[in-house]
Length: 387
Image 1 (cartoon, rainbow, N blue to C red):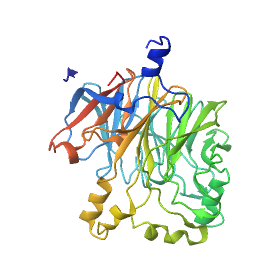
Image 2: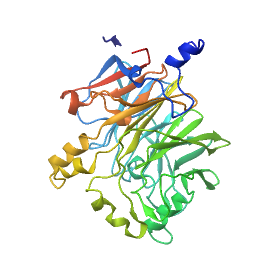
Image 3: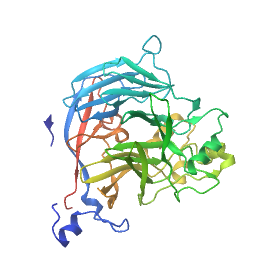
Image 4: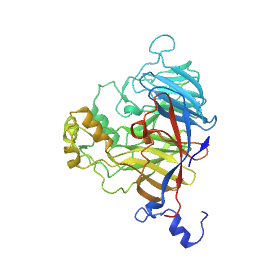
């Protein structure tokens, strides 16, 4: 790659550099920033989303939703494998919101069933969920992966009694499971990652569909849902994900969407100016000694009212006006800094951490200039020196 341009010592250094154990006391937020340190060119034409990284092979997985094309490339940007997900024939993969991920040396996709593919694109296995289902939890992030010798996936709602969205939402708030584990040999399954008690949502009110962000960071898993600047930490134990703690992001000037009575859930979108699911956390980045959360805080009702959201161009402009910021925590989730600006030249929604502990993200061609026949992968480091 081309190069672009704590020790814990007693009290004074701790005050300057270390993270506070209390979320009420934080270090100087201006001393933390993301510094661009490297870039790689990927010779590929077309839209591309960064999906996953495998530290064992040092490979990245990206996806072109329009063409349903999977791309696997190395840290030099050289493409190792590329293939199209087929709509018909013996290699057909059905479903919406396809979200390919690395899994135990292969690729896993949750569509109408769970598909296991080789890294060359050959379908190796199709695993049926052992009951009829519909989606309420997975949203656009539907994913599956291995958990020991079992499969772990976003839990869909059983459809035996119809698609009752109101009841499904209430079950989640009552501690419903966000994920499920399936033994592919016995077809036995059990729920896991139960939604914890939270003061972010009041009983009897609807705060928007709970499209979750669920990410793994070694032995820990992280969960957040839209309209709440908090995340929940789970520990992986005996092929279950057990709740550990809830961590709040004390962002300033956040504008949550206003809830509606649960029985009037269909009015939520209109009440909130036809733009919703904000504020929310967009990405978790577990580093060696720090933990980063990317988030947006929404915009004021006055700002929303200044746009004609029935006009696609103005609606897009409004969505892009949402400030994207990040918070830094230490390895035990003590708050270090909050409301830091994310570089505009990166796509923050799919940023990853490589085995060297660097943050990697695709260049945002909307903000930093269009490249017609290639993409750029940026590498960032977290800088936490003094101001």
